[in-house]
Length: 327
Image (cartoon, rainbow, N blue to C red; front, side, top):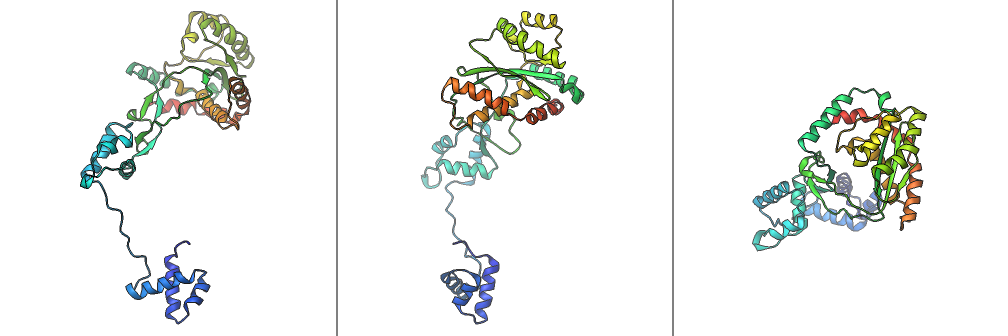
């Protein structure tokens, strides 16, 4: 049964003092008779209607140990709480639990989150990204809406459980200490697709290894060139080796396809990366989840067409903000 509010307690005591019976008060306030009886006894003993203070569980760590726990997790943001608990002896030589460690970290506003998967950005790469952002920060919305953003992405049937956690405060998600490098992995289905404002291409499945010749013969020639020419768009792809190979760059030049220069190690700048994430979430939420490669391919085709075009358009409209965010 839920506790009585302070207002109800004071009202009940007032009715009892006025001579109303305990049962009548219970009926009037719609509470159990025993609740009113305990409240009456407490008022007679202590002269108050508020709850008596309860003893908290005694702390098993000293203030100095609390600071030490916070310090080691600030030094190593990926450190698990179980490790700290195993290495810390509390008061009276008692072992502390991992939950105690988590409680001390939360008191310091440190909470466990999945680490952001970042990129290996050297000073030169950071400078190139900044220069690119400066050059395109003043692009009008019409410019971004005239770009076909393309990319490949790998979809797998099963993936790691992602149990690695990082301890961080609010607003620290993208701090260097809270970012881990992306790791390439194989298996699954490789897909190519493109998006632009108001429309998207069909997904194209890539079997085997995509080299420069296959990229030109299977994607650029039959898909990209006709699409660009039909809708009068600028072409964007990243700096993957097949993309920047000589046979591909020469082919695009011969077809008079305008190509948007793109900074190296900058997939996070492309709106299609967020579309891939949305597609992956849709696939994982299917019931049942794809259990083999053919089911995965079918799911990719169906969920790709189910992504609202408004979602894609909003991502493209935010390109200028992405450039500003690099500062």
